Image 1 (cartoon, rainbow over the protein chains, first blue to last red):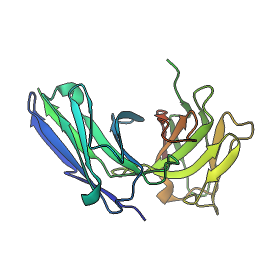
Image 2: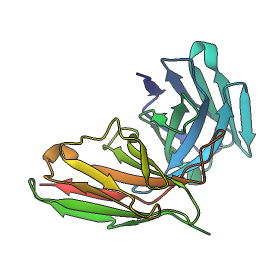
Image 3: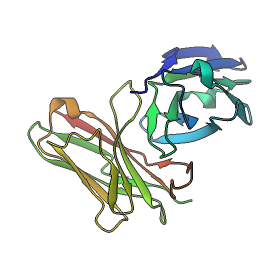
Length: 112
Length: 116
């Protein structure tokens, strides 16, 4: 069974810093990988999706990379803002059937 | 903007009682998902519907959990009897149609269940 791990579990940074969140998965035969944001007590919002044939995707201050062979993905957030404070989850889809395996998340706090 | 609706937002119940959660997906979305998210963990898929049919319920504890989507629109997830370990956030999501590849999943706000 696919296992998805995220490190660190929690991270605090001062406003303006660049930061990297890490995601690793045990089975490299994936269809795609997604990064989500979850605000406290709320549902998930999709941020970026990387197909298995791609190496990275960018949206605004966010950049996600994928190294499928090593089972790793990173989410880079540039010039962090207090509004970026949330839990960030990565999820892999192995078959393309949209059945997602989620990591445990990284709780990010950006300090003003 | 269309959203996935869930109710109730919060539910407190005693163990051995029955509970039910309701989800109304975005209009026109053929695929509906129920996830369970235990505090501090990522969501885990419980059941996936394509229209009114179940396409994946391999992680659904079928001895106590049931889910239905009778008319292929809204859906109900039921737990009977509830156990202490069922305390979690129950998330519903919908997507247009996964056939042929990725379709973004849109998540509702969730139902927070506490079993006492």
